[in-house]
Structures are given as C-alpha cells and as structure tokens.
Image (cartoon, rainbow, N blue to C red; front, side, top):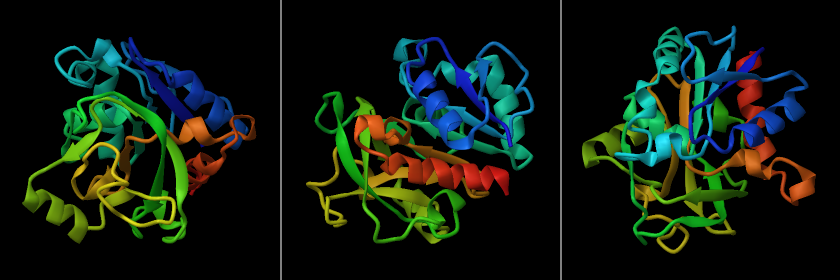
Length: 230
C-alpha cells in the first residue's frame, strides 16, 4: 500500500500529513507535485490543507485545474482512494468529485480551534469502523468551511449514507451551538456515491501524535490506511 500527498502552491499541511501517515503506516509517503502527471503508483491519494493558489477566486477553484488533478480524477474513476482535508476537501468539491460546496463560515471569521466529531456512515469504510458513540476531538482551521448543498442533495446524501462525520459537542450531542461554522445538518465530511472519495474539514493529521497531546486523529487515519491496505 502506497500513499501519495499532492502538493499545490500554498499547501501548508502537506508535511503534517506526510509525518502522520509515515508514522502510522511505517512506509515512506510520496510527494506529488501539482504540475506532474505521475501518481508514483500511489494507492491512496491525499489532498492536504492549506491555501492552494492563495485561495484566489475562491478556495480550491484554481487548484482543481492543476495537471495532477487529471490523474487524481482518473484514479478515482477506477475505484482508487482519494481523501481531501480542509483545502483538499474544497478542491474535491470544486472538481465535482464530491457533492456540495464549502461557503464562508457563518461568523465570517477564520476559525482555528478543537471541535468534536462523531462518525456517521456505516457503509463508508473510513467511518464505519469507528463506534457511533465515540466522540473525537479534532482541530479545525478554516475560513470557508460551511458545507452546503440544496435540500434534495442533502436528502440524497443521507439516504445513501454518504455523510461520514458530523460536528457534535463533547458529550456527542448534535446542536447549533456545537456547529462551528454553520454547516448544513452539522456536516463535517462526506464521501462520493462510490465511497472511495472522501472529504472533511477537520484536520486529523494535527491530532495524531502524543507530542501534541491528542491522538484522536489517528483513529481516522488508521481507518483509512486499513481501507487502502484491504
């Protein structure tokens, strides 16, 4: 199983992601420059957080046209695994690889803090192995993280079990107060209908080491690595 992390101009969480995935998998992670067409044999492609192309136009709008994205799309169409975190999630939505869009936070402010999540989908492997009552503490850092789609699309997401994480409070309750950015139905992450492309706004790679005092993110990363190794 080989992991590749795409690096765009403005990516700033690529090294965090690489460190976390190498630590957990024990294998070297490939850096995939955005201008290249070679995925270097990667089984799992990760689009990390940051400010690709300075978030010009809107977050992810330019990065989705980078040459490497042609290969990422082709990889996903063959059933290959793709995961986007924060800006990576925005890029996947802009590319049409995931449903919905990410709007400015309802506070109109950049938010950087720990939040709580609960796994939702029982058919998307990234979340299905996580107990439904387990509350994970994971950091967020975004200005445009408010997930949105029209009502019919949200119903379809729920009907097809495509919501992978929702924001909750420390006790696991869903509420407006526990929703940090105003995302519709407290959605923190979704997957595609084929359940091989995943996106989420929180940063598990920033909570995957005892040195930072939080290893909850390792639970999500390990679930993804297990899926890639299956």
